Length: 371
Ligand code: V47
Image (cartoon, rainbow, N blue to C red):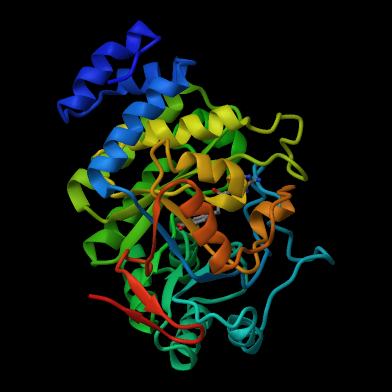
């Protein structure tokens, strides 16, 4: 039992201790309070109830086949116009070659996302996936945000379901959580007006889950959204999860303003980053994992988050572009040993996992997924 400084949290503590669901209003109250220790205490209670001391990480590699993007979102520093001399698009051979580069430790996951390229076709992406599976049959392909799927469907003149089926049949194993941003339309119109809207993002996720694909989900905070927008976003994710049970992990993403059209906005603080982890753990009672994405939070804050509701640090990554284009000063990748050290020094028990959280046993160059 801890001392609760903010009396508004007392009814919330009662609900959390009784395992009851929190409401939209509770979410707003949690975002409004400065009593971060009480919020963290409650989030840690839930985290330990669900996972004990286990803290997950994976050995993965990010691949961003192109930064060409037709969307021009104000929030983004990664996407470039097709004629921008600084834009790049990898050939299929380059994607396959890049996938095998980097550290010697065998990766268990490729995390593949890119811009909305006006010329790359669904067939091109399917060939990319088939080529990766052929060369790296043991590696899980977590590929394409709901935004990329919806764009490929629209360009190809086919349904979202058929697009997902074709990608799945070509080797897509699951999907990352990006592109959700904030579902509120007022905010979305300002930060990413050329993207699918919140309902379309949710509908695409629903279809993916109905096809048996698992995915992650995210929320971008620290720009022009308010407490109600964030609580609403979490409640909408929770409602879809009640229906499909398809979300594996939630990742709160802090807005990085550098080199974006919103660079006048201040960077988020450590306080906000920790708070977003804790509130997510409390509100998303049906999503198994909360990820403290170290690239975005810095390894130091991500480590603290392991005591405020997070049970996952993400992975080795090797080469990150989206956050580094927007001013992230963290490393491009971390070694497995560094992730182990961060987790152990937080007094937690590291568990290497695959994308679907099955434990992994490994030597340097090979791994076995324990089922
Ligand atoms: O979709 C883009 C966001 C996302 C900026 O599923 C920005 O395991 C902050 O989704 N500042 C990509 N955020 C990252 C992402 C992700 C990362 C790690 C793990 C997983 C997972 C997913 O980053 C984008 C967008 O929401 N983003 N620009 C920016 N300037």
